[in-house]
Amino acid sequence: MDTQLLVIILVVLAVVASLTGLALRARDRRRSAEDQTSATPDSAQQRGPVVVQETQAQATTGATAPSVGRRPSLRDRLTKSRAFLSDRLSEVLGGGLDDDTWEDIETVLIQADIGVEAARRIVEDLRAKARERRITDAGELRGLVAEELVSLFDFERDRALAFAPEGVTVWLVVGVNGTGKTTTIGKLANDLERRDKSVALAAADTFRAAADEQLAVWAERSKAHLIKHQPGADPGAVAYDAFAFARARSIDVLVVDTAGRLHTKVPLMDELGKVRRVIEKEGKVQEVLLVIDATGGQNGLVQAREFAAATGVTGVVLTKLDGSAKGGIALAIENTFDIPIKLIGIGESIDDLEPFDPKTYVDALLS
Image (tube, rainbow, N blue to C red; front, side, top):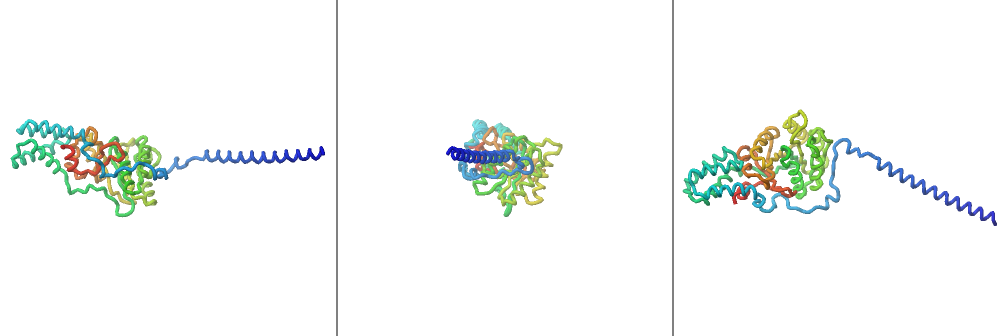
Protein backbone atom coordinates (compact mmCIF):
# COMPACT_ATOMS: atom_id res chain seq x y z
CA MET A 1 0.00 0.00 0.00
CA ASP A 2 2.80 2.40 0.89
CA THR A 3 4.52 1.55 -2.37
CA GLN A 4 1.38 2.25 -4.43
CA LEU A 5 0.87 5.63 -2.69
CA LEU A 6 4.46 6.58 -3.35
CA VAL A 7 4.08 5.78 -7.04
CA ILE A 8 0.93 7.90 -7.32
CA ILE A 9 2.64 10.85 -5.64
CA LEU A 10 5.60 10.58 -7.99
CA VAL A 11 3.33 10.47 -11.05
CA VAL A 12 1.41 13.55 -9.88
CA LEU A 13 4.63 15.46 -9.29
CA ALA A 14 5.92 14.50 -12.72
CA VAL A 15 2.72 15.75 -14.40
CA VAL A 16 2.83 19.03 -12.50
CA ALA A 17 6.48 19.54 -13.40
CA SER A 18 5.74 18.84 -17.04
CA LEU A 19 2.83 21.30 -17.17
CA THR A 20 4.90 23.96 -15.41
CA GLY A 21 7.71 23.54 -17.92
CA LEU A 22 5.33 23.89 -20.83
CA ALA A 23 3.87 27.06 -19.35
CA LEU A 24 7.29 28.62 -18.79
CA ARG A 25 8.42 27.82 -22.32
CA ALA A 26 5.23 29.38 -23.75
CA ARG A 27 5.79 32.50 -21.67
CA ASP A 28 9.37 32.78 -22.89
CA ARG A 29 8.28 32.45 -26.52
CA ARG A 30 5.74 35.25 -26.09
CA ARG A 31 8.32 37.53 -24.49
CA SER A 32 10.80 36.78 -27.23
CA ALA A 33 8.23 37.64 -29.92
CA GLU A 34 7.32 40.88 -28.17
CA ASP A 35 10.97 41.89 -27.85
CA GLN A 36 11.56 41.26 -31.55
CA THR A 37 8.51 43.31 -32.52
CA SER A 38 9.49 46.30 -30.40
CA ALA A 39 13.05 46.20 -31.70
CA THR A 40 12.04 46.26 -35.40
CA PRO A 41 13.17 49.61 -36.93
CA ASP A 42 10.70 51.75 -38.88
CA SER A 43 12.61 51.89 -42.13
CA ALA A 44 10.03 54.24 -43.64
CA GLN A 45 11.23 56.90 -41.24
CA GLN A 46 14.83 56.43 -42.29
CA ARG A 47 14.80 56.63 -46.06
CA GLY A 48 12.64 57.40 -49.04
CA PRO A 49 9.44 59.43 -49.12
CA VAL A 50 7.26 59.04 -46.08
CA VAL A 51 3.60 58.82 -47.03
CA VAL A 52 1.09 59.56 -44.32
CA GLN A 53 -2.32 58.31 -45.37
CA GLU A 54 -5.65 59.23 -43.85
CA THR A 55 -6.88 56.79 -41.22
CA GLN A 56 -10.39 55.53 -40.69
CA ALA A 57 -10.70 57.88 -37.71
CA GLN A 58 -9.70 60.82 -39.90
CA ALA A 59 -12.21 59.86 -42.53
CA THR A 60 -15.12 59.74 -40.13
CA THR A 61 -14.49 62.53 -37.64
CA GLY A 62 -14.12 66.29 -37.72
CA ALA A 63 -16.61 69.10 -37.78
CA THR A 64 -18.23 69.91 -41.09
CA ALA A 65 -17.45 73.42 -42.26
CA PRO A 66 -18.60 75.45 -45.25
CA SER A 67 -16.36 75.37 -48.31
CA VAL A 68 -14.87 78.30 -50.18
CA GLY A 69 -17.58 80.72 -51.27
CA ARG A 70 -20.05 80.05 -48.46
CA ARG A 71 -18.49 82.22 -45.75
CA PRO A 72 -20.29 85.04 -43.89
CA SER A 73 -20.05 88.71 -44.89
CA LEU A 74 -16.62 89.96 -45.85
CA ARG A 75 -17.34 93.36 -44.33
CA ASP A 76 -16.92 92.18 -40.74
CA ARG A 77 -13.64 90.49 -41.62
CA LEU A 78 -12.13 93.69 -43.02
CA THR A 79 -12.86 95.89 -40.01
CA LYS A 80 -9.30 97.22 -39.65
CA SER A 81 -8.79 97.79 -43.38
CA ARG A 82 -12.16 99.49 -43.66
CA ALA A 83 -11.42 101.68 -40.65
CA PHE A 84 -8.25 102.93 -42.34
CA LEU A 85 -9.57 103.70 -45.83
CA SER A 86 -13.22 104.49 -45.20
CA ASP A 87 -12.69 106.61 -42.10
CA ARG A 88 -9.92 108.69 -43.68
CA LEU A 89 -11.99 109.33 -46.79
CA SER A 90 -14.84 110.47 -44.57
CA GLU A 91 -12.52 112.94 -42.86
CA VAL A 92 -11.29 114.28 -46.21
CA LEU A 93 -14.76 114.61 -47.74
CA GLY A 94 -16.30 116.09 -44.62
CA GLY A 95 -14.87 119.54 -45.30
CA GLY A 96 -16.38 120.05 -48.73
CA LEU A 97 -14.85 119.91 -52.22
CA ASP A 98 -11.92 122.10 -53.25
CA ASP A 99 -8.42 121.73 -54.68
CA ASP A 100 -7.06 120.54 -51.34
CA THR A 101 -9.70 117.79 -51.26
CA TRP A 102 -8.26 116.15 -54.35
CA GLU A 103 -4.76 116.23 -52.96
CA ASP A 104 -5.98 114.75 -49.69
CA ILE A 105 -7.79 111.94 -51.53
CA GLU A 106 -4.58 111.13 -53.40
CA THR A 107 -2.67 111.03 -50.11
CA VAL A 108 -5.20 108.67 -48.54
CA LEU A 109 -5.01 106.31 -51.53
CA ILE A 110 -1.20 106.26 -51.42
CA GLN A 111 -1.23 105.57 -47.69
CA ALA A 112 -3.64 102.70 -48.36
CA ASP A 113 -0.92 100.99 -50.44
CA ILE A 114 -2.59 101.55 -53.79
CA GLY A 115 0.60 103.07 -55.15
CA VAL A 116 1.63 106.55 -56.28
CA GLU A 117 0.98 106.20 -60.01
CA ALA A 118 -2.36 104.46 -59.54
CA ALA A 119 -3.46 107.03 -56.94
CA ARG A 120 -2.66 109.94 -59.25
CA ARG A 121 -4.49 108.36 -62.16
CA ILE A 122 -7.53 107.65 -59.97
CA VAL A 123 -7.70 111.24 -58.75
CA GLU A 124 -7.37 112.60 -62.30
CA ASP A 125 -10.25 110.40 -63.42
CA LEU A 126 -12.29 111.40 -60.35
CA ARG A 127 -11.87 115.12 -61.04
CA ALA A 128 -12.85 114.70 -64.69
CA LYS A 129 -15.94 112.64 -63.89
CA ALA A 130 -16.96 114.94 -61.04
CA ARG A 131 -16.86 117.93 -63.43
CA GLU A 132 -18.72 116.01 -66.10
CA ARG A 133 -21.47 114.92 -63.68
CA ARG A 134 -21.38 118.21 -61.78
CA ILE A 135 -20.86 116.45 -58.45
CA THR A 136 -20.53 118.75 -55.47
CA ASP A 137 -21.89 116.51 -52.72
CA ALA A 138 -19.41 114.53 -50.60
CA GLY A 139 -21.70 111.49 -50.53
CA GLU A 140 -21.91 111.38 -54.31
CA LEU A 141 -18.15 111.74 -54.58
CA ARG A 142 -17.68 108.85 -52.19
CA GLY A 143 -19.77 106.69 -54.47
CA LEU A 144 -17.67 107.85 -57.40
CA VAL A 145 -14.50 106.82 -55.54
CA ALA A 146 -15.91 103.31 -55.06
CA GLU A 147 -16.86 103.16 -58.73
CA GLU A 148 -13.37 104.20 -59.77
CA LEU A 149 -11.66 101.66 -57.49
CA VAL A 150 -13.81 98.83 -58.84
CA SER A 151 -12.93 99.85 -62.40
CA LEU A 152 -9.25 99.13 -61.68
CA PHE A 153 -10.04 95.41 -61.64
CA ASP A 154 -10.40 93.41 -64.84
CA PHE A 155 -13.70 91.57 -64.59
CA GLU A 156 -12.85 89.49 -67.66
CA ARG A 157 -10.10 87.67 -65.78
CA ASP A 158 -10.78 84.08 -64.85
CA ARG A 159 -10.47 83.85 -61.07
CA ALA A 160 -11.48 80.20 -60.76
CA LEU A 161 -8.85 77.64 -59.78
CA ALA A 162 -7.86 75.47 -62.74
CA PHE A 163 -8.28 71.69 -62.72
CA ALA A 164 -6.82 69.15 -65.13
CA PRO A 165 -9.40 67.74 -67.57
CA GLU A 166 -8.14 64.29 -66.61
CA GLY A 167 -5.47 62.78 -64.38
CA VAL A 168 -3.78 64.59 -61.50
CA THR A 169 -4.32 68.32 -61.00
CA VAL A 170 -1.13 69.99 -59.71
CA TRP A 171 -1.07 73.28 -57.80
CA LEU A 172 2.34 74.75 -56.95
CA VAL A 173 2.18 77.18 -54.01
CA VAL A 174 5.01 79.72 -53.75
CA GLY A 175 5.83 82.71 -51.56
CA VAL A 176 8.34 83.98 -49.02
CA ASN A 177 8.35 82.60 -45.48
CA GLY A 178 5.85 84.16 -43.12
CA THR A 179 3.17 84.98 -45.68
CA GLY A 180 0.89 82.13 -44.59
CA LYS A 181 1.83 79.80 -47.45
CA THR A 182 1.60 76.50 -45.57
CA THR A 183 -1.59 77.58 -43.80
CA THR A 184 -3.12 78.45 -47.17
CA ILE A 185 -2.26 74.97 -48.43
CA GLY A 186 -4.07 73.46 -45.47
CA LYS A 187 -7.14 75.58 -46.16
CA LEU A 188 -7.08 74.61 -49.83
CA ALA A 189 -6.84 70.92 -48.93
CA ASN A 190 -9.74 71.27 -46.52
CA ASP A 191 -11.93 72.89 -49.15
CA LEU A 192 -11.04 70.24 -51.73
CA GLU A 193 -11.92 67.50 -49.25
CA ARG A 194 -15.31 69.15 -48.72
CA ARG A 195 -15.84 68.89 -52.46
CA ASP A 196 -15.10 65.14 -52.30
CA LYS A 197 -11.72 65.54 -53.99
CA SER A 198 -8.85 63.28 -52.94
CA VAL A 199 -5.80 65.36 -52.02
CA ALA A 200 -2.07 64.81 -51.58
CA LEU A 201 0.32 67.38 -50.10
CA ALA A 202 4.00 67.47 -51.06
CA ALA A 203 6.38 68.82 -48.39
CA ALA A 204 8.91 70.29 -50.83
CA ASP A 205 9.94 73.04 -48.39
CA THR A 206 12.75 70.87 -47.06
CA PHE A 207 14.94 73.73 -45.82
CA ARG A 208 12.72 75.42 -43.23
CA ALA A 209 12.86 73.83 -39.80
CA ALA A 210 9.74 71.79 -38.98
CA ALA A 211 8.04 72.80 -42.24
CA ASP A 212 7.02 69.20 -42.89
CA GLU A 213 5.65 68.89 -39.34
CA GLN A 214 3.49 71.96 -39.84
CA LEU A 215 2.23 70.58 -43.14
CA ALA A 216 1.56 67.21 -41.48
CA VAL A 217 -0.81 68.90 -39.02
CA TRP A 218 -2.77 70.44 -41.87
CA ALA A 219 -2.77 67.13 -43.76
CA GLU A 220 -4.32 65.40 -40.77
CA ARG A 221 -6.93 68.12 -40.30
CA SER A 222 -7.90 68.05 -43.97
CA LYS A 223 -7.65 64.24 -44.33
CA ALA A 224 -5.00 64.55 -47.05
CA HIS A 225 -2.06 62.29 -47.91
CA LEU A 226 1.39 63.67 -47.11
CA ILE A 227 4.57 62.95 -49.06
CA LYS A 228 7.86 64.06 -47.56
CA HIS A 229 11.59 63.31 -47.46
CA GLN A 230 14.20 63.94 -44.83
CA PRO A 231 15.02 67.57 -43.87
CA GLY A 232 17.39 69.17 -46.37
CA ALA A 233 16.44 66.77 -49.17
CA ASP A 234 16.20 67.85 -52.80
CA PRO A 235 12.83 69.63 -53.24
CA GLY A 236 12.67 68.40 -56.82
CA ALA A 237 12.91 64.79 -55.63
CA VAL A 238 10.03 65.35 -53.22
CA ALA A 239 7.91 66.85 -55.98
CA TYR A 240 8.75 63.98 -58.34
CA ASP A 241 7.87 61.30 -55.79
CA ALA A 242 4.71 63.13 -54.80
CA PHE A 243 3.50 63.29 -58.39
CA ALA A 244 4.34 59.61 -58.93
CA PHE A 245 2.38 58.73 -55.78
CA ALA A 246 -0.60 60.87 -56.80
CA ARG A 247 -0.72 59.39 -60.28
CA ALA A 248 -0.39 55.80 -59.03
CA ARG A 249 -3.19 56.33 -56.48
CA SER A 250 -5.42 58.33 -58.89
CA ILE A 251 -5.34 61.32 -56.53
CA ASP A 252 -7.45 64.24 -57.78
CA VAL A 253 -5.27 67.16 -56.64
CA LEU A 254 -1.60 67.40 -55.64
CA VAL A 255 -0.69 70.60 -53.77
CA VAL A 256 3.05 71.28 -53.53
CA ASP A 257 4.50 73.37 -50.69
CA THR A 258 7.75 75.08 -51.65
CA ALA A 259 10.63 76.88 -49.97
CA GLY A 260 10.39 80.57 -49.18
CA ARG A 261 14.05 80.87 -48.30
CA LEU A 262 17.03 78.58 -48.95
CA HIS A 263 20.01 77.82 -46.73
CA THR A 264 22.17 76.82 -49.69
CA LYS A 265 24.05 78.63 -52.43
CA VAL A 266 21.31 77.81 -54.93
CA PRO A 267 19.13 80.90 -55.57
CA LEU A 268 15.53 80.45 -54.45
CA MET A 269 14.00 81.25 -57.82
CA ASP A 270 16.23 78.72 -59.57
CA GLU A 271 15.13 76.03 -57.13
CA LEU A 272 11.45 76.85 -57.61
CA GLY A 273 11.84 76.74 -61.36
CA LYS A 274 13.48 73.33 -61.04
CA VAL A 275 10.58 71.98 -58.98
CA ARG A 276 8.14 72.98 -61.70
CA ARG A 277 10.29 71.50 -64.47
CA VAL A 278 10.60 68.18 -62.61
CA ILE A 279 6.82 67.85 -62.33
CA GLU A 280 6.24 68.85 -65.94
CA LYS A 281 8.50 66.07 -67.17
CA GLU A 282 5.72 63.69 -66.16
CA GLY A 283 2.62 65.89 -66.00
CA LYS A 284 1.42 69.48 -66.04
CA VAL A 285 1.14 72.23 -63.43
CA GLN A 286 -2.33 73.78 -63.60
CA GLU A 287 -1.79 76.56 -61.07
CA VAL A 288 1.17 78.44 -59.58
CA LEU A 289 -0.35 80.33 -56.67
CA LEU A 290 1.68 83.15 -55.14
CA VAL A 291 0.82 83.80 -51.48
CA ILE A 292 1.28 87.46 -50.45
CA ASP A 293 0.87 88.89 -46.97
CA ALA A 294 -1.49 91.87 -47.30
CA THR A 295 0.05 93.54 -44.26
CA GLY A 296 3.38 93.82 -46.11
CA GLY A 297 2.17 96.68 -48.29
CA GLN A 298 4.24 97.50 -51.35
CA ASN A 299 6.64 94.63 -50.59
CA GLY A 300 3.97 92.45 -52.13
CA LEU A 301 4.57 94.08 -55.51
CA VAL A 302 8.28 93.26 -55.35
CA GLN A 303 7.51 89.65 -54.47
CA ALA A 304 4.95 89.36 -57.26
CA ARG A 305 7.45 90.63 -59.82
CA GLU A 306 10.20 88.21 -58.79
CA PHE A 307 8.06 85.10 -58.42
CA ALA A 308 6.13 85.76 -61.63
CA ALA A 309 9.35 85.93 -63.62
CA ALA A 310 10.73 82.69 -62.15
CA THR A 311 7.70 80.42 -61.83
CA GLY A 312 4.98 81.69 -64.13
CA VAL A 313 2.50 82.71 -61.44
CA THR A 314 -1.12 82.13 -62.50
CA GLY A 315 -2.89 83.62 -59.49
CA VAL A 316 -2.42 85.42 -56.19
CA VAL A 317 -3.66 84.45 -52.74
CA LEU A 318 -3.81 87.55 -50.56
CA THR A 319 -3.60 86.58 -46.88
CA LYS A 320 -4.05 88.27 -43.49
CA LEU A 321 -6.61 90.77 -44.74
CA ASP A 322 -8.30 90.53 -41.36
CA GLY A 323 -5.19 91.98 -39.73
CA SER A 324 -3.59 95.40 -40.04
CA ALA A 325 -3.66 95.46 -43.85
CA LYS A 326 -4.56 98.82 -45.38
CA GLY A 327 -6.49 97.13 -48.17
CA GLY A 328 -5.09 98.92 -51.20
CA ILE A 329 -2.47 96.30 -52.04
CA ALA A 330 -5.12 94.23 -53.86
CA LEU A 331 -5.73 97.09 -56.27
CA ALA A 332 -2.00 97.69 -56.66
CA ILE A 333 -1.32 94.06 -57.59
CA GLU A 334 -4.08 93.87 -60.18
CA ASN A 335 -3.26 97.30 -61.57
CA THR A 336 0.45 96.51 -61.94
CA PHE A 337 0.55 92.88 -63.09
CA ASP A 338 -1.47 90.74 -65.43
CA ILE A 339 -2.12 88.29 -62.59
CA PRO A 340 -5.56 87.81 -61.04
CA ILE A 341 -6.15 87.65 -57.30
CA LYS A 342 -7.99 84.35 -56.93
CA LEU A 343 -8.34 83.87 -53.18
CA ILE A 344 -8.16 85.92 -50.00
CA GLY A 345 -7.31 84.75 -46.48
CA ILE A 346 -9.46 86.47 -43.86
CA GLY A 347 -8.72 84.60 -40.64
CA GLU A 348 -6.86 81.79 -38.93
CA SER A 349 -9.62 79.17 -39.06
CA ILE A 350 -9.27 76.34 -41.58
CA ASP A 351 -12.36 77.68 -43.35
CA ASP A 352 -11.20 81.31 -43.62
CA LEU A 353 -10.36 81.29 -47.31
CA GLU A 354 -12.65 82.94 -49.87
CA PRO A 355 -12.74 83.47 -53.62
CA PHE A 356 -11.92 87.07 -54.51
CA ASP A 357 -14.68 89.25 -55.90
CA PRO A 358 -13.53 92.81 -56.70
CA LYS A 359 -16.86 94.60 -56.19
CA THR A 360 -17.60 92.82 -52.93
CA TYR A 361 -14.10 93.66 -51.76
CA VAL A 362 -14.34 97.38 -52.54
CA ASP A 363 -17.82 97.60 -51.02
CA ALA A 364 -16.51 95.97 -47.83
CA LEU A 365 -13.67 98.50 -47.64
CA LEU A 366 -15.78 101.60 -48.16
CA SER A 367 -19.16 100.69 -46.65
